[in-house]
Image (cartoon, rainbow, N blue to C red):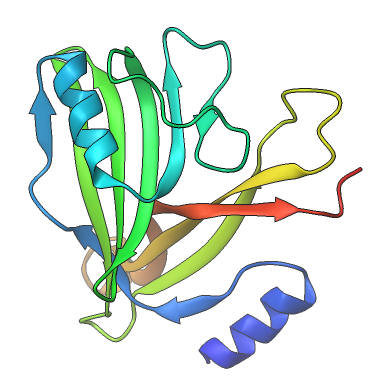
Length: 175
């Protein structure tokens, strides 16, 4: 079944599907200061992006992206991804009313035999007219079976339940 879905997706220039889930790699954490948030974010490593209050553009680990940001930055949002000891991990940072939320995610196998992971890439707009290619932000989206409806009158659908940043691709086709 997944082979058929992947051939249709590939023929339309879309990502691939595989069995799996996205789970919390560790308990989400909220920190009170920007310094704590930046230290946790930068110590994770890997590749990713960060939006700070000080910068009019997004900083990223891809070539020429102004990385690493200052540990004194005021982070708003950011994502990092890495593979470590065979584990596919990501860290998501977000400013909240109570401080900064840090969420560590991991791809795992599907325990139900039905949950799927779909790879997709999103365009990032050119920040300078002289840029010759566009940086694509890549994500894996988890789709999990969910019962829709009441009792026996319902049906099971695959619904998106989580996503994680997985890295960058350079789209060389862009002028």
